[in-house]
Image (cartoon, rainbow, N blue to C red; front, side, top):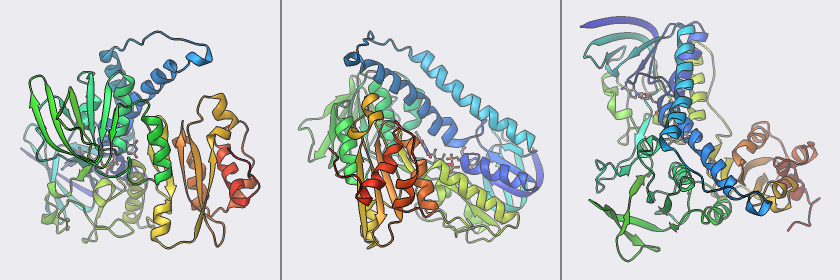
Length: 469
Ligand code: FAD
């Protein structure tokens, strides 16, 4: 059976990129078809990414905080975790948001077509539903937003139910007694924080010489010191060379600086070594769209591919693979199709690890400033000197600002500490608006707050604070 639909804009994929593009295009008066292979909208972020991980991290933080209040005079008993209720709570959070998206699509008269979409020509896409029926979509413009999926390693028996990717870990099949996180990036560390709070003993192995390799060394040094109190073993400059699934556990062999001499037995292994784009899975070549060997689609600063009426956004156009980047790209692509002369040229795409403590950074890192030969100076305000941090038992952290030495402009900023992600907004806005140290230092920040640390770091830069611990 086959259906035919004609539209001004087809959007392939309904993640943060896809639904944002579809909604913006519809709001601008365009006729839109949104293609999604799964029954819910929202893509990785809402279904198996940002949102479920944060629902679990929220619970994890409360569990850890409650256990750490003894010296403040409050002692709780050992927490009892009902994993089925926790999973149901997480699923409810997801369905609240994905259901909301369904309503928003309906309200805008976006035509959602469920099924797997592949190009059949420069203006045609075939969408095959689960029951085998096909919808032929003829379009004037297309926005490819097909996202990414977890990288699998060839020597790992991924089919074993105890070897997880992030989607499996979020499903919480069981709470392992001990667990290896393979890959010290944001996704692995967030899931490690969840399982550690639920009672699992966590080992992390990372090939590079620091966790979260994209962030500056000093920030990560402080983070690693804090997280080492929760995790059993952090093995940097070490790699996994073999993984064997046996009846009594997963046996992992290591090589490198911190490698244990013998294979270690784990109840579960989370493979979190990155994500790979889905660009190669949609027959883009049939539309004439070039896809790189790695599955990325190259675009210009209006998100246009090499085929002028076909755009691409989100994870499959490159790093950073983040939801907020996808959303902003989506808006530009939809607006360009609607005839606006807009461009995607952000100064800042913030990054946050929602671990405990959180790690957050935006703008230039020190490493990037060095690489670009920029004369910069950093200013640090340690949270050990913050009244709010001391009152909240959150002194493990600091705020760092990076200024252009020539004009005192804010180039970048980073924080490690409780709720650092929520405090990053001021730094993002400051960089986008071209703020300098004086702007930040003269802005009256409320006291006592952690965001005060931004103004205080600017005062450190200006030399008006010199007596820090
Ligand atoms: P996706 O969200 O990947 O959506 C693509 C959609 O396209 C999917 O629904 C897929 O089913 C559909 N699709 C693909 N191919 C086809 C096809 N051929 N036909 C039909 N449909 C198709 N980012 C953040 O910014 N903050 C976070 O806190 C954060 N946490 C994360 C936690 C985890 C565990 C993971 C895995 C990711 C996290 N991310 C986070 C990353 C974020 O989820 C992605 O950057 C974001 O979802 C990318 O959006 P997208 O629109 O490009 O694609």
